[in-house]
Structures are given as C-alpha cells and as structure tokens.
Amino acid sequence: MMPVTDTNRLNSLLQDAWRLHQSGHLDVAARMYRKILAVDSEHAVANDLMGLYLIQCNQPAEAIEFIQRAIRKAEGNSQSHYNLGVALMDIGEAEEAASAFGRAAELAPENLEALNSQANCLRLLGRVNQAVPLFERVLSKDGSHPGANCNLGYTLTRLGRYPEAKQAFEKALNARPDMAEALNGLGELLIAMNEPGKAAEFLESAILINPRFAQAHNHLGVAHNKLVDVTQAIREYRTAIEILPTYAEAHMNLGLTLEQTGNLEEAARSYTSAIAARGDFIDAHFHLAHLRTHTTTREEIASMQELWETGKLNQKQRENLAFGLGCGFEKVGDYADAFRFFTKAHQLRSKKIPFSLSREAEIFGEIESTFQQQMFVDAENRGNED
Figure (cartoon, rainbow, N blue to C red):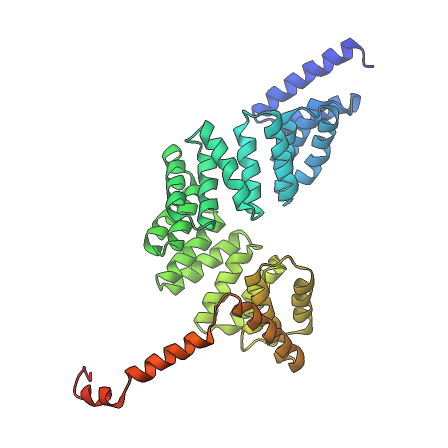
C-alpha cells in the first residue's frame, strides 16, 4: 500500500497536470502523467488522462491500452468507458465502440453524449432501427441537441423517412447554424428527394465552413451530376479524393461519371481504387467486371468469389456480385461458370419482380385487341409529322 504522503503528492501532481492539459499544454501534461504512472502504474485517473492525451494526438491505438488499464482499476468510471469508445471509433472498431459508449451511458444516464455516440455507432454499423430509439431518448431530454438531431437526420434518410429527416437536420441547424455535418446531411437528403439544385446550396455552405470536408465535396459532385454539370461533378469527386485518398465512395462516383463520359480506362482505374480502399465494395466489383473494355483478371475473380462465399451480403449485393462474377468468367473464357453465376443473378432478381404468365397473356391480349388494322387506317392522317 502506498504511503499517504506519496498519494497526496501524486494527486497534487495530477491536478497540476490536468490544469496544464486543459490549458492546451498537452506535452507537458503528458510528461507529468508519465511521472505518476512511473510511481503507480495502475493509477486510474492518470491512465485515463494519458489515454485522452493520446486520442488528442491522433494515437488512438496507443490510447486504448492506458484507458483499459484505468477501467480495470475503476470499472465504474463512465468517462473512461466514453474515452475508450472514442479511441475504438478512431481505429474503426464501431462494434466495440458501441459497447463502450453503451456502458458509459449505463453508468451515467445523464451523459447524453455517450448515448448519442452509442446510437451513432449503431447507425454506422447499419443497425438503424436500433439507433433511432436511442437518438429519441437523447432528444426527449434535450430536444435541441444538435449532434443527436443531425445523426437522427442521417438515420431517417437511410430509412426513407425524408420529411422527418429534414425536420431533424433543421433542428440541428437551428441550434448550430454553422454545423457543417448537418448542412452536408441536408444536402444528401435533398439529393435523395431529387432536389439537386437545393442540395448544392447546402453542400456549398458546408464546404465554406469546412473546405476539407471530403463527404460534402463528394455529395456536391453527385448534385452536379444530377444537374448535368459533369465537369464540375468530376472536379468535386477529385477534390474529395485529394482530401481523403481512401474515400471509396468518391472513387466509385468518379468511375461512374468517367464511364458515362466515355473515359473507360480512367473509369476502370477509379473502380480499382474504390476496391483497394474497401475490398468488400460490391458495386465497385460489379462495375469493374461489367466495364466492356476492362480485361478481368483471375485475381479479381478470386476476390469476388471470396466475397460470395464469406461475405455477409444482402440480396441486392448478392445479385450484383453474381452478375459481376458472370461477366468476369465470361471475359476469361470460363463460360460454364459464367452461365452458372448469370443464372444465380437472374434467380435473385426474379425474387423482386413478380411474374404471372396469365397476367402477361392478358396484357398481350389487350394489345392485340387494341391495335387492330382499322385503328391504323383511321389514324393515317393524324398527328404531327415534324
């Protein structure tokens, strides 16, 4: 057991370090945390604050070790679990981050940031129906909470609940008019509502606030594409990629636009970059294999087959991947496998398209009875020949 005098000295040092930390003297504070940990390696608060320092220095993987040590010593500290969630999100572990944020919210129900962060992790994991009630819990306690309203807006957009999503984004912007994330979300929503002109206005506002906002540049590219301003669309996609080179969606959108304009070789490179950024990007695999000028490689086919066998795919993804594999096998001359996957693709597509032979016969019967010879005779001198 540590003598009282040592405990008092460490606590005094910790208070001084935290004051320096809060005033922005991070490196000095970190040196003091390390001094404390050299004496007491299990000091819960020092470990937690050292983890926070590392998060702020963009070293989340290193931060996790310190924060977990803090939690082992003081499991009931909500802030430590919250900090762990932040670090896990920074390294892309959304599932584990959701659990950490959930534990933080459980320990401190008044911690709305933890609850909002947990819900947002679930949104990013695609579990949108689980996320909505959590956002609503936050908003039941603070209806103007900008983060929860913004995140709820993105979630409702994905669910196709557009009027509610618009209301959520507007509430976020009423609380924080300069919230670039909400402006971007509103732009994305308006694109989904087929209002690209209005969308572009909000996205340009987001970029004015944050010129390095890659997602806003990408969405602005989509808006310009819908407005048939292909040159500006390509420029925005390239800007998004320059800011965030691993932005798979921007590479994909650039590829689609280049393909539309006939730049097929460049389109192939963009699809390849999208796959390099995100190996399970089914649409990119599909469009690359489907591109008529691209010579599919055995390695590309193997990647698609691995996704087919091991990937957690929904029906639309399996359909696109099957078409991609069909195209790929056809290009390498493996026609048996090409037909096998084309058959699978059409079987999957047929599940979404109800077909009735009797109804088809009825439709063709109606066409035959309507377009009689006399109809063409009667209409011979009608209409506009220009």
